Image 1 (cartoon, one colour):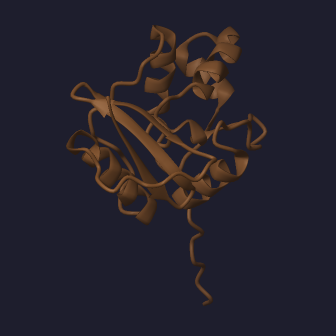
Image 2 (image 1 turned 45 degrees about the vertical axis):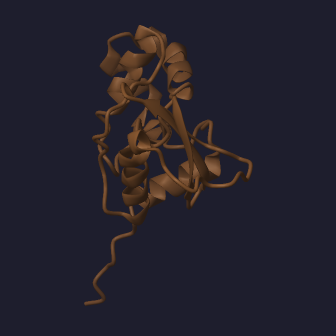
Length: 157
């Protein structure tokens, strides 16, 4: 597995992958040196994350290879269907997956998402519209949601 550390507005992000795709992307709470060189196999992911943060990318198309159970992968795939700038509740996600009783399992799988931002677990909010737990910290979740839904300039006339 190749690894790299890149700077983002939300801290240093760790990227790991190989010829089968990107397996992990997560943000660190600690400061570590950014990578002087990004391995070729990770360059598309690093560039697409950069584009996302500058506001020119809404979807990711590099090869992904997250590791998890079949159920977790099903949840992560469903997260990919939540459009940029939109949110959904755990309950909505659970209904979409076909088992309303699985809400805790869905929440657990969401929390174990190995592809930060790319699989948009930050777009999951509480049924009452509140920000709910987020592995990267609620301040990051708030930042990401605001980044994806910038305020619309109202006309003065």
